Image (cartoon, rainbow, N blue to C red; front, side):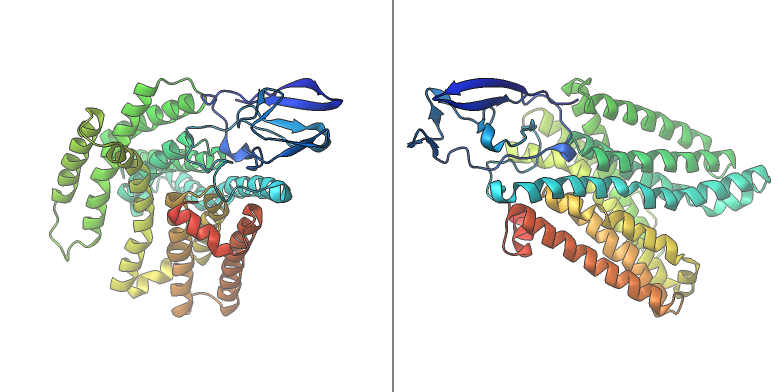
Length: 419
């Protein structure tokens, strides 16, 4: 939904001013298109040779929602979602007029990079979908049994949880990436079910959850879903994520540890109790906020655990690493790496943590392992290494320029500790 601006001409001593009235905070606006105003509204301005306080001009109050900007230097004003977790223009670190152009440009570019992550992620799943189709048409159903449907299901649940997280933050490009992950993985699961490699009852239950999740997220993003229904959905994915994550972590080390469902059932009980306490007012405001962030963090930890599981498998069976594709690992590194600038720019610690972990340990980490066992060329490894270091350096440098910082480490400090 696009924010609408109303410009009203005001005559003040021969000068002309434009009053930009932003939309109410309840209006949902994609954060990929938000440009934040610089904190200059309280600075004195000169009117008729006299200093006029930024708090008012001839009885007109200057506020963030009612800024007055001289037509001699017009600045675009866009609505800001007050419920968003993004840093607002009145926070420390927001750019001044001198850096506004760089800020807006980098805002736009980071959104494009995040949306561009769809390309490598699509290329990751498409070959598997094509191969599965060929085997199904040839009647070679046994070949599809090599695809672990449980692992695919866990990844799908992670995509669905992150989709809700980014839909809530109005990050359209990141939400699109997660939607693509949900749809493509569901196609693979459908193929596995057709080959009888996945039980039909599990696929039906998964399809119901996926369909419901996609519809609810779409309705919420466009402001068509009531808050109670959205909270109910958030509670559902929070309990599901917290139940699945410990079970996955435990199962990774089987048979070194006994095969048990105790981690999952224990986590389910704890998650259910936390949700009930949060919804019945038994927790403090900080506690409720913590419970609300659990679904996003558990989904992130699921994806972060994937490279750990892969590395553990490589450690136990070093010869298996030869079955990995260096191109697949490169695409994974590129897809997650493209989202790093956006996560840093909007100061989203959870998003940056997950993307950086996957970039370094799943993508680049496996490329390093392939190079160490002579499964990839020296030139391929060198290009991947130089490209990754250059990309991270560029993201830190451009973010510092956009915010007007003298050091890129200032951005990292704000990310962890706040402005």
